[in-house]
Length: 333
Image (cartoon, rainbow, N blue to C red; front, top):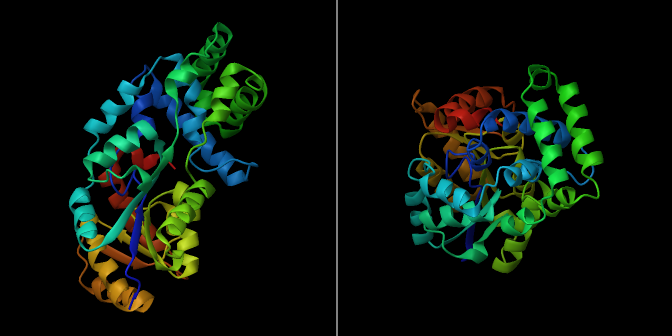
């Protein structure tokens, strides 16, 4: 049984708490923005998987900064998206129940601070000190934009809409490598991109470490909930420490790093799993998964033990639920 009086759980935001991908929808506010975002998101995956130095999964939010500034998107646009963002089934209720049972609930999100803090308020997570998200001084960065910057962004944006760039990763990488790491270096726009440090990958793990220190609770006693490549370091850290790393409607990158997978339309389906872990640690969680698997129906929930197993079956099930819950955002890494 978990003995500590302090109990902590940390959620990723986009996926487990809202079905919306904020950056994707924000780019969708400009003509052709979804096309551009899909291309940059694919480039983000290329860089993350190639292990580019000092590059983290989720740095897409830095890469789209030139386009947001060029199209004069504002804090108002970001906060309006958060106001309208669809919540995952029973997300607010699940957070309220966990808090009522004595959990300190944290959110570790790649998304911009203006979005994360407003959505957190809707979910009942009003404590700013329990939210880690990407700092984005939008007005300050917009004031730096020059006419030369505008010309460069226009040219690249037009190129990203061409079919050969969209369909050929080598062409895409050549184009964007030249833009971000050569043309923008030393320019005001390049400095704006470099100043945005999205909370993804290793930075999510660092945020978790800070929260664990402030709560005085080692990571082996934490529950974390994630779903994508930006969560891989956080999930791996907790899983390897002996905590409970839950992958909720995850993709392959996350499923490879979790303890348990939960595929469902409702976040509340993590609650009995968490309770089993509280009562009897990892053995309790594994016993619960084995028992629940016998009663699973097509509509879910589906529980899969991930640690040390072949994830092929879980990947197929999670892919189906991920598409149902996240729709357009499900295709993004």
